[in-house]
Image 1 (cartoon, rainbow, N blue to C red):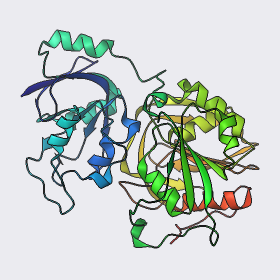
Image 2 (image 1 turned 180 degrees about the vertical axis):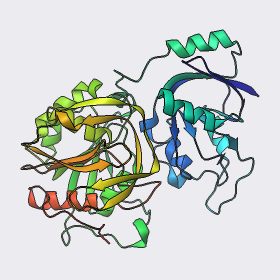
Image 3 (image 1 turned 90 degrees about the vertical axis):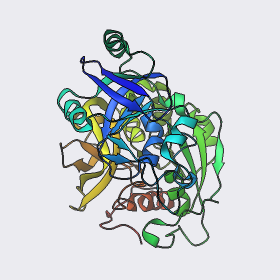
Image 4 (image 1 turned 90 degrees about the horizontal axis):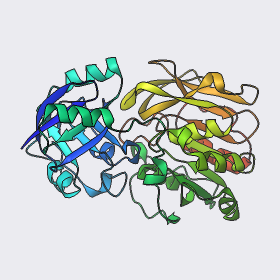
Amino acid sequence: MKAKLALENGTLFTAEAFGAPGEVTGEVVFNTSITGYQEIFTDPSYCGQIVTLTYPLIGNYGINADDLESARPQVSGVVVRESSGIFSNFRAQRSLSSWLREHNVMAIEGLDTRMLTRMLRTDGSLRGVISTIDMDDSSLRAKAESSPPMNGLDLATKVTCERPYSWDGTDTTPFALGHSSPGGEMGRRFKVVAYDYGIKRNILRRLVRYGCVVTVVPAALPAGDVLAMKPDGVFLSNGPGDPSAVGVAIRNINALVGKLPVFGICLGHQLLALALGGKTYKLKFGHRGANHPVKNLLTGKIEITSQNHGFAVDPESLDMSKLEITHVNLYDQTNEGFRHRELPIFSVQYHPEASPGPHDSDYLFADFITMMKSGAPARGPRAVPVR
């Protein structure tokens, strides 16, 4: 089936559909990961986005139920150079195309994804529309130009859970790199409340493997309700959209500062910065991939990280009398992490749960455990992950 992709800058691509038919708009972005398409498509942080994969062959190892980061695909659309007509993997249960069609996700192939990626790097992320219905060029251009920009969109409250639920630790996913769980204190289980702004399942798996009993709560749950649960710590999750638009989350985080240890990832990192008086801004084309180098300023070591974000924290806006920059992106020197100098609070922009991706940053979960044990900032930075 023929399909077209139109961008707000007027560029049009003709392609073939291999997902569901129809029409969808979204912000067109690119991801440089070689593997992990299933985790990418089910990451709620991609809500509202049409994801272009730069690796040329996608779908060759199929789909399996164990690697989903949420219950269903979260992307608005998928763009690839070539979709594999066959799949081969001992864990595979079905094809990528059948899975996308079941969940009504539009996907196209057969266009020049290298050209598209170079355009997004030059012009920045662009609004776009994919259609198998409307083949009129001028109509498609108009739809792309009139689609909503990502700036100002609160998508976290769109993808969050409806009510609190427990992640009970029955997940049997092996510990990273085949090592046994580092756990916490002997026999100790740490109670963690995780704010769901679009949380990934592997974050929950990592928290459980480090000795936590996790309660996941909606993005807008009042801070008072969280405190009433008497947790040992609070986790702020990843998620989509503009962090400055999620006002309810910023107010709740502000009310929790100084009362409990707090650990934030991705959108949670940005929201924490805003709650502490900082500012965020939209990146030109964002950071999306499993191969981004980040320098840990506390150890001097380089971590190869998995990333997915279109906004960043302005380090110049942070109060350096209270906060300390801990990580920096080596591609463009953007902020990748900070910690509080006196309170048990820290956050990172990238994904230490690393699914897909390397495991260089898994030690951050151990640092969170350390903070919950002591109630104080994690002193003495770790140079290597806990084994």
